[in-house]
Image 1 (cartoon, one colour):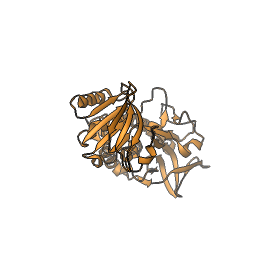
Image 2 (cartoon, helix red, strand yellow):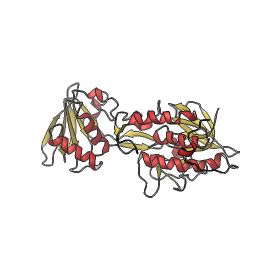
Image 3 (spheres, helix red, strand yellow):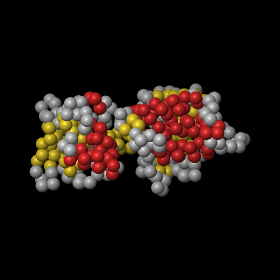
Image 4 (cartoon, one colour):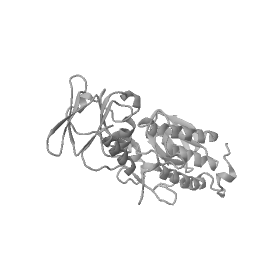
Length: 334
């Protein structure tokens, strides 16, 4: 059995920052994640994607951010269980929690911090003819290795940040990039929208707005994507690969049966300290919900900091917390 002060469920950027904030207050953490590596969605789905809203970094790649955070928490020597899902959480007579993993790991902790991002997630698939015939080789719901598309003809579908960001990034790698969107406006960041329009104007990508996808076509391999434009005309788009980026469909999995209040696949929290309806369990990052919630990494960082201050009282009920700035106190390992 693993014994720790805090069990952090989720090894994404917010979960890792929770480890850092806990470490500053001399609380030990064990991190468990269903994915086989740390980094959450950043490492699993878009490790090469540039991130623009991390303070102090005009731009930083997703995997680089995770690598930096792992270096940041190294002095606190956190322990990890990866590739295993939390199945059960049971309160013990002394007030602690016993956490059971799907592969038999058991963890005893005074505090649980759920930082599971979107929980168990799966890509939203478009409804179009012949999709399943090409899924294994020619359809990619996420971009793990951009170099895989070098000198290829690709069609990206979607109108959010992910579709815009990968269109911008792959424009300099692929032979031809076509971005197809069913609307004539985008949901993504205005700066990214502006860059996509500029690429289209310069002839570096093909932009097809107000187009409805119809089917994937080819004999043994993908040859083209069929769509219908606003005038109800059939459009054939040459393609070697199809990348639909419509976001992720969240599924809480076993978390939904732990007795927590659940609201539309999210966990309501008290914004004083991001505690849940169960004392000693906190939820931070994309998995929580509250009025004014923004699903941004930097907001999750803020939530982690306030959570740690509250968790200290659970771990050390007899001690008084004296908050000090790291510029004064430094980073002291265990």
